[in-house]
Length: 466
Image (cartoon, rainbow, N blue to C red; front, side):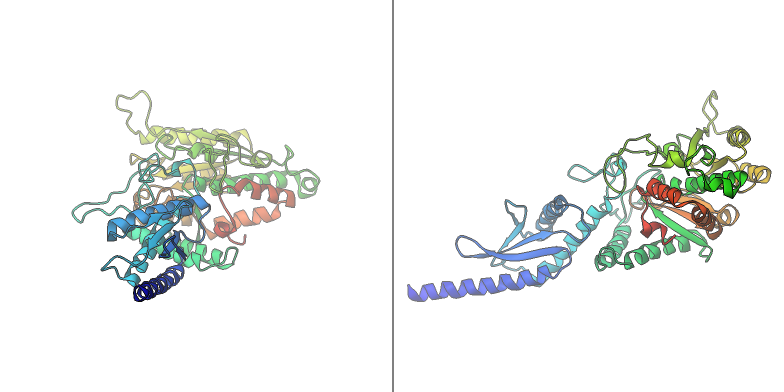
């Protein structure tokens, strides 16, 4: 009996040493927290939680741990036992035929992939609420990659897509770089800048005179051209008053508040929240920065900066048998709406949307509408925005438009079949520098109001130092 007891003790020590070594290797992984505990029988088990830096809540860790536990069993047959506090326990000794080092690598890969999925689900609006066993949104897409068989084509959509394996792999690569950066470090902005630079290189013609602002969605991107219009209209009012007279007035006085009208073309065939966003309102009940907001309510401080309106122009002529698209009719509708706003107030600025492919493929209005309005009222008072959110156009269009008018909206989730609702604004340097100059000319109180107005969608990492 004594010999048998010594053998059992030696066996336990070996198992404990193996568990300690496994836990040390696992705990060194970015997405694994591991430690050893002894059961009532004295047998060791490695307890683990799976997640990553930058996850927001403990529930995220619980979710990632549960998913990885299921995926690991499906892939290897190794069953992790769930504890009452949500950890995953791996009893020792390991099952026969299981290599410890290979198992750690598999756990890390699964934890890393699911952590990135959880992070990608954050920072948007109610279109990116993912529920159910497959974690899908109301468009039945999710952030997990869809791996189509070789004989099938993974088509994009006109609204929301699940990422491809290649897209998810790129997200993992970016997340790894982010995890190495301490929160608040300047390198965060550099990483976002690298993402923006690659967007410019891919879509903006690759020139040095174009920049990109990354956005939670194409709808949020409307904030940038709206801001340009608001600041321009305010400058025109200050110039009419005279700087000396303007300086003694509160920034939100009637004499200084801007007047902006956004003309939304192809209404009903662009983003459902476009009109709200174009007039400076919340278009969802959730904010990308977190927390509930009131849909249709003006962004904070926006009403103090300017009166913002939006006019919806249809792309299809009402009353026709099939609702066909009439280019001449649609052009006239957009042109009339813009001219009415410009004639009503000599300091008003209009934002004219030219849609390069709606959800059903319409391109409206014609570029000649933008050309005519700029010729008659000047580029100061007519902000021409290319709505290229579907990205279903020739590669030469966007660089040409940026050179002529300075602003284009894009998303990754339509033709490119990227993750849901990722967006960006491409700006010419002239367009961006005009925003920066007008903002710098405003009093400090107005600059604070601008920051409050855009803080639901942007941080310094997206906008840069300016």
